[in-house]
Image 1 (tube, rainbow, N blue to C red):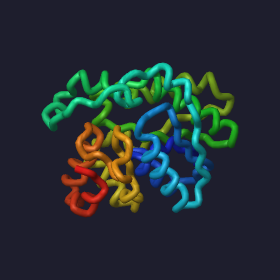
Image 2: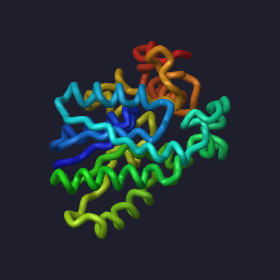
Image 3: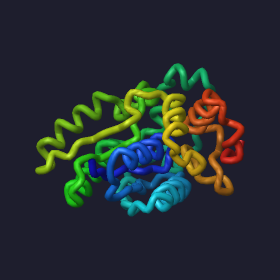
Length: 227
């Protein structure tokens, strides 16, 4: 299947990128800039991933989001410290600090527009079961409803696909190890790069480190984190 991949540079998107590449043809990888402070790190990771496999990569500027987002994701204030217990409990404030209004629906719509234009049948995105517990737009229900909308909004019937939709982070890392995804370039952090590295203490970094640890490979990637 020909696909367009939403490639943020994070764990889920890079593993999905490699799955899509193994299963078919990627016509383009898209990285969206919606004003996130982590954009530099994300774009660098996504660009390196696409370059390694000879896939066309494009940055999509969604600059209007900068007027809509007033939380730490866009640099308005600092993220509150979180613990593994907070993450397991799905603390509501973690959602509020990192929520971007209607982001994933818009990213899927952008991907679908590119896909239909390029003749691709799928938009591949890095959704996952673990974060779906906190973020409803990561869930299987979200994908189902987006696909129902795309049946009407695209003439070619573009579909959303996520190879990690039913996987947690530990299982996603295991899949990435199995299929040879370039995990060494992943940038799964809510903060701007710390001398090129992920902060190591935000919710996203803690999930990533825990998943590396659960697969026995944390030592291999510790240098990617500032803390």
